Amino acid sequence: MENTMSHNGLTIRELLIQIKTLLESHLVDLKQIQTIYQQAQTKDVVGLYQKIIASSRIYEVMPTLKGIDINHIQYEIKSILSRLFYESGFRKDIFEYDMERLELIESFNESIHPQELLTILFDMASDDDNTLMFHILEGKFIQAYDLVLKQLNDARFNVDDPMMSEYQRALNHLYNVASDERVAKESYPVLNRLIKKE
Picture 1 (cartoon, rainbow, N blue to C red):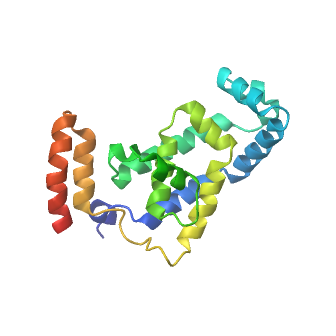
Picture 2: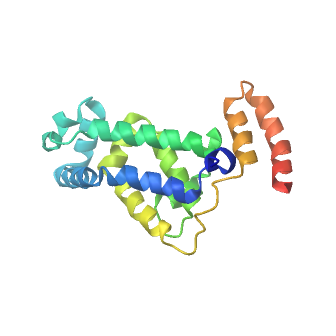
């Protein structure tokens, strides 16, 4: 039997399920981390933020986190989401948003489309380690997990289609690895029109 991914790429459902599995494996710890962070914030929000930014070890700032391997969780979320980003065929400049749209997507509003949810998750994974740590502390991945569950069961969204066509994926891959960015930006719209016609 032929490998469907080689021709059609990952479906939106397959991506959502892989992300659900990833977050589910850390869900208990993610919830505990968020609770500990919220409790620590009640004393001094600004001071806590500055201490976390200034320290290379989160456990020095919040000793109650010592029983949780937050660095491993952070590494696994970052590496798996980064791998899924490249496997799914997104263009590397997907993260160049219009700020208004970014705020809507980051709100994890239930009306956002699964592709937008995937985009913001991939964007979060591309953040620097400090920012990603705050996503974990603030419970952003718990919000994402809840939304993934809803979208997998929401009839409004067709999540069984491939994320994109094999042609689009191939073109995006070429764009991502092109050594001359100017040529890539000039050639992409021309080839993309052909893909849309097909």
